[in-house]
Length: 378
Ligand code: SOE
Image 1 (tube, rainbow, N blue to C red):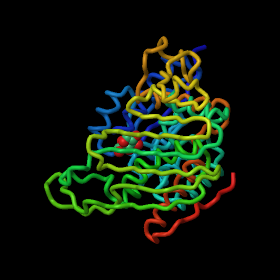
Image 2 (spheres, protein in one colour):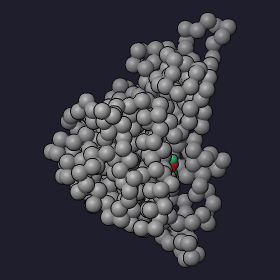
Image 3 (tube, rainbow, N blue to C red):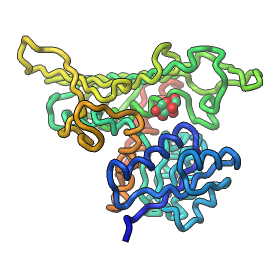
């Protein structure tokens, strides 16, 4: 008897669809998994383009209506890689059809929509996961381990920045990421949501926020050169108070010239500090206050040893991994979760909590007041 499989049906096939497809393909190669993800079908509205994508990315078949995936008995998991506005509708329908779900971030357009999605998956009893892939960089997992073991002692600060620059040119073209109706928000949900996930993962819940969501350019050209109104934020900047007592600052923008994908954080505690930068993702910079005086300062740990998270899964020590591997780790957690019938993390509960932080920042930017983040059970 051959290895068992879990049938995957994916909706959407652009940037994230490509990252997810690659991860499904490589997962059994590196993790030798039983069960393995069987790439059954992708869905997209344009028949010609979805057929081409299915062939290029290694899917067995394609559909032009995502609802057909829900009816197919060979599909166990629905993977949602569509623009944000359709996440809730697809996730709820998938849950009602009894499918497990992986959803790209953000889970929904706002917290009340995220609640509805969470209720649907809980009611259906399906496994659910949200794709915050940066948690799964080995260096981030090492940061988590060091903090949990108390190596930093009490935590004082978290400084998170997520800096991109693809909109720094005021004439850069309009896209769905600039429409509130389709995206929910701009840099806020797209980039700050990743920083919020890392912060919650590393330090725990955020209790209160004070934020600013500026828009620098309010009109951009469509492909024919006609002006289209931008109605989302261009940047998301906020202060945060953590339940653990730490103070946080967050900055996410698409206007930080020279920063292509600058997802970074620094954490300072009473006994040490940590720094991480996605563009050097295998390195964790560490500082320990009890290092001998003559070698005090930050040093860079290459997180590729066997003792590191996922160490030994790919290559010998010193042979680095990349962006795409963080998605392989997401798929690994997902498949393990389905196999063990335990929700992996981050799941839709994390998606809701993340969205509650984002909503509180939005409220604060409107009212110009500090806002408490709503507390939720479970
Ligand atoms: C675009 O800003 C984007 O692709 C985000 O949508 C991703 O979540 C981020 O990881 C990289 O940048």
